Structures are given as C-alpha cells and as structure tokens.
Image (cartoon, rainbow, N blue to C red; front, side):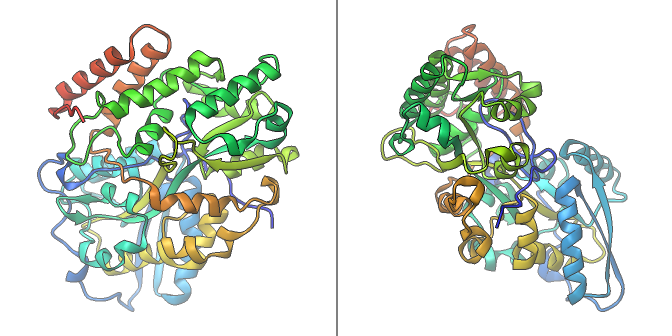
Length: 457
C-alpha cells in the first residue's frame, strides 16, 4: 500500500539549514538538573483524583493544524468507549501561534486548555515559565515509562517529576535518489561516515557538472549541527544543564558541516525559504539527497509523485567508522493543565491517543511517527514495504534507529541557545570567523544571558 505519510504544516527541523516545522517537532528537552527555576509543575497529581466520571464532561484541546486534526480523529474513537465525553477543539495554524495563545491563557489563568500539544523543544520553557500550571503525571506515567523511547523523557521531566505524555519522534535518515546515485557511480552502501558522504557528494557534483548537488544548506541554521551533536551523544547542554558549545563534540560537528560547505556539495538556500526551496530542488532534480527526520517521507511523496521508485533511505553516516548513526529531529507531546476540572478523563484521553493502536494508525497516516515502542515493534504500518521507496521498509529502518537516539537536554533556554548558534554558524560558514572563535563567542553570550556554566567536555 502506498504510504500516506503527509507533510504536516509547520513542525520539526529540517537539516542543513531548512527550518521546516512539522507536526510536533523539535527534539530534546529540559530535565530536573538543567536549571529550571522555582516549582516545576503542579502538586495536583494523577493518582490523587478519582477515576473518570460517567457524568457529561467537556475537554478543551488545543494544537496546530494536522496535529490537532489527528486528535480530533482520535476523539471519535475515544467517544466509543466514553460517550459522556465531549471535546472543544481549538485548532491554530502553527506551533508559534499556538504558543502565543498558551502564553496568554496561562499568564491570565483563564481559558487554559485541558490538553495541550507541545513540541519537545518547548516543553522545558513552559515548565519553567509557568510553574504549577501543568499536571504532575509521575505516578500515572512511571509504570509505562519504558514503553516510550528514552529520548522523549528529558523534555517532560523536571525536578524528578513527569509533566507530559510522549507523542512522536523523528529519527533522522538520509533520503537519496537511487537513479542519480547510480548515474554518478555511487554505491550507497559504501557511505559509512560523513567523510564518505562528502566524498560521494563531490563525485556526484563533478559527474553532473555542478548541476546537481548532494543536498541543500543554509548558513545560519543549526539543523545539521544538532544532528551531529546528538549523534555523538551530546547537544547544546549536558545533563547538568551546562553549555557544551566549546566541547570536542561541538568542534567536530561544525568541522564536518564546514567541510560540506568547502567541498562544494551543498546548494545554498536562504533560511527563510529553505523548506520550499529544498522541495523545489529535489522536484527539479537539483539535489540527490536530503537529511531529514522520518516525517519527510510524505513531503517527498506528495511533492514529487513522478519520482516514485527513485528514492531510498539509509541511516545517517557516522562521525567515525563504526560509530553511532542515530539522531533525532523533531517530536511533540501532550501536556495537561494542572487546573483542569477533569484530570482523570484528560489523562485517560491523552494516554489513549499515545498508546491505542488505532489512534496511532491515524497518527502514522497523518505523518506523525509514534514514540510508543510496542507500536513500533508490532504495527503492520511500520513493517510495510513502501513502493515509492523501491519497496524499502522505510518506517522499519527508522524504528531501528530509535533505541540508539541519545536523550537530548534542550533545557528551558533552548531558544536562546539556538539564536546564538545560528549567528555563529553564519559567521563560520561564510569565513568571517574561525570555528573555535564562533563557538566560543556563542557559548560566552549564552552563559552571560542564562547564568549557565560552560562545560569543556
């Protein structure tokens, strides 16, 4: 059966400079030792309430475009079990605009949704900014914690307590054109490291006289940097919340991407238009690969139907031979208001959406790749061959990477860090700064603004 994985509004992070927001993306998160201030969530806990009532209940649920639409479809399934439950759905056009609404309502303490979709990268910020506003789900979620990808939990955990239920995850892959690789004499199985990928890109670029590049990139964008850091078991911050921008891992990550630019294998696209420009590039046969989360399946299928059978995927190249190939790009979660009048019903609904096989089938068909491990292991949709990708079991390949994704710690200062790193990368890749100077500058500015320590390891 043809995959129905779709492009989802804005969410996730496209790599090598493509800021493409996909249904619930952004990776990593904040944990208790990362420096969240004050209280974390609410003293109201899941097990302190009686079970779901049989009386009429209405839950307000808010999120963006297809992510919210997916929950609307889930609600129809849930109502078959709980016909007394109704839903007031608020659908916003994008994650940023959704967060604008959350911020206003949480600050006012009025009209706060019972159930909120929150990207993994933003969860820590909300927990820090609005202490006592999110329901403590520790007792409720601890028994099933091992059923979700380990990479999901840091974002939802603060001061040892859990404040959300994981939804999707975005294992990153290399999507590549088999026909263009073959014409250039490139054997994809020979690409084991990023150096191999760069060498293959040079061979391909030379073969096509510069008319076809290996992939796209934007100067001031941290997408690739984050993947390379995550692949090395690192991120912007270590598990203590210290800044890691001057560590060997950071130096290596930027060095690899700088080599990509210097080798001439990248087609430059501006950050502001990188998403659409990259789609145009592969539709017009101007690039031979894209480094993206699994959610990119639907974007390729929907944008270039005539290229069916000409695409395949492979795990990310490793930083060094035999090294890790897993990294995450994207993800979202459900968080519940601490002041909901119906905590048990909200909890049961959120868990249903994240664990019920029929509900997760809906997620899959809408381009939202679940982080619930029993589903990844047992669902026919995961193990199904994809004709568009030459019969590859694309979702199974992605699933194989999930257990090896290192949990990333964005902390509540993720957005601040991204801004400084984007600026530094723009300077480095246009030869206005050395790698060490650029990273040191970003680390120092981030430390000054946030009060965090700079780690050397």
